[in-house]
Image (tube, rainbow, N blue to C red; front, top):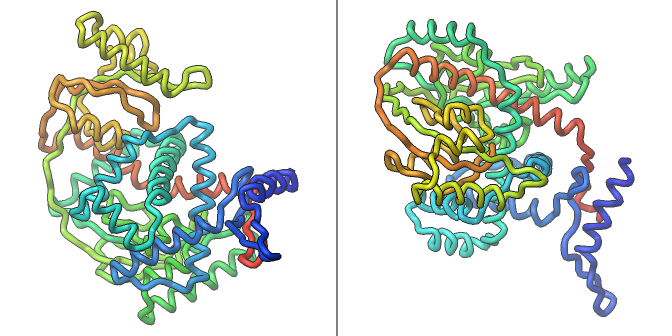
Length: 433
């Protein structure tokens, strides 16, 4: 099986990469950097991502590790992305050109540029814009796949919510947020005691380097197996409630720049640093009331057909020929169908990002156009919007959200590791063709 997969992938790429022989000279168009199941990672993809990371590091005045260490991290990301894209293809996850253009426009706006100005800036930096554009599409797909795959693995019990609510009540309104850095020295699959000892030795060396003033982001890029490695190990700003329990117990009440570890987990040895601390401002929570109709694409029902069905329902509603609730009861494939698609008052941040963003763009009682989320195709209506102070229901929603975030990163790492363990992966040295 292993040889046949390798032969299949190499055959496909050799056809694409057929060398042009002129005057006894061979011109290599591209080559295989890695085989991932029946797909491949091409050297050109590796080169483009490394170039992009270096440009971004230069722009942000960030120090990078050696080219070899950076290449290892880039290969890991591209292999993981390839696996998730393969899963996404089986799941039928797609990102339309309209969705992609909106995402790129948002990225450009964050840098105070128009989309065209952003494109021109990339061309000026010798970055292939079309390649970059497709890489953003792939990032959106892999994000949807990860969310959908990991979400079903996370269970939050009523007792966990009750315990967290009790803890939240004991905290002051000026809750502290931590910006944590994380380095994971990973175990191999089914590690032996020798593997564990070796990982511990490497983790101890990392601790020594950090205690002697080495740059955390550079070491994370070079050494970490965590998904945050290419971000310099930066986990972002999190309150104690959003932080994995093991880390929260270590950093609570501690000061900036403190380093903790090695901390043994099921994945390996973790090293945590408090990069920064800030006081958290309490803000009001906006809830929305809405209803939707969900259609799930299948092998028989295509993406285009699902979208067309919902557009037909919308046309009927606008013409006064059909009632939204009745259509939801008859056709929606969501648990809310029996309630006419009603989702009740909810903090939209717990939903799929695309669903939340669509509702945010609507006026009250306005219908959306059919749109795709990681779950399927939706037709939605915003029926209300309100701002709340802390209430029992809001606190329960927030507790659920915080617990989900706390569990997501660790469960995501386990899922990726399991996916890789089940896959056929072969990485080629740069000298091999």
